[in-house]
Length: 59
Image (tube, rainbow, N blue to C red; front, side, top):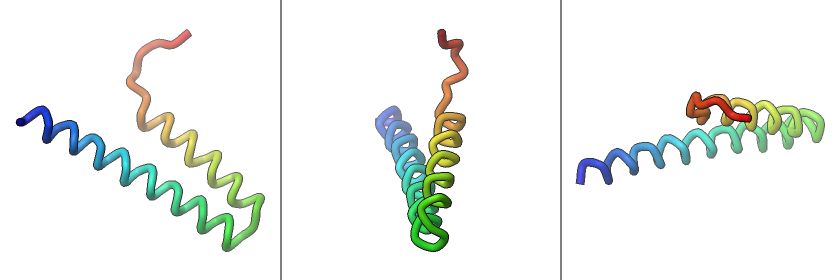
């Protein structure tokens, strides 16, 4: 039961982070234009990669 709660907490964090970045991207796209939306989307994806990186070496 404890491991299930841990997985749900991890899923909650992932969903909230992804939703937050998606909302920021959409607001930039609507409020400032296509160029700002694409820039915000790129930054959001880079931040998600950084935050979800497991620290292992990749080749």
